[in-house]
Length: 125
Image (cartoon, rainbow, N blue to C red; front, side, top):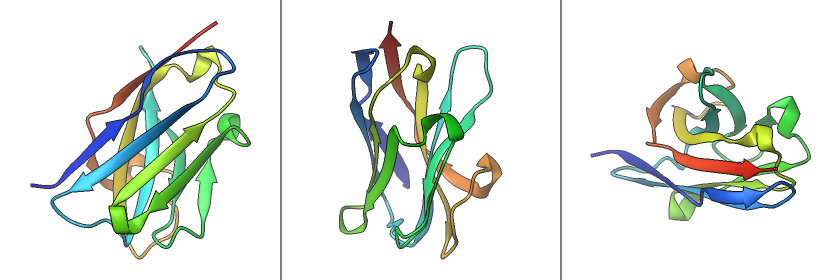
């Protein structure tokens, strides 16, 4: 059974940091594009960051550039999202997703096949 499990969410004050992790089991995603999305209450799920399968190319939502960093550890089948200088508007459920193999970064959720259950990030003002 293929599974993506996110961890690292929580409650943090504005200006603080969190590091999200996404670990895959059931198969390797070392050659797949990986992404992070988020969904705030009452809003649609939106793209946050993506990384290509060799980890060379990355893409970010404009509002998180210079604050968030996506990275991957392929031997450990894990993807990370380091979030610094968090703002209340970053509050959302964050989802990890696995996309197409041997492809570049993808910003659309339709390019992703496997999804985790999500981890809550709450930023207080």
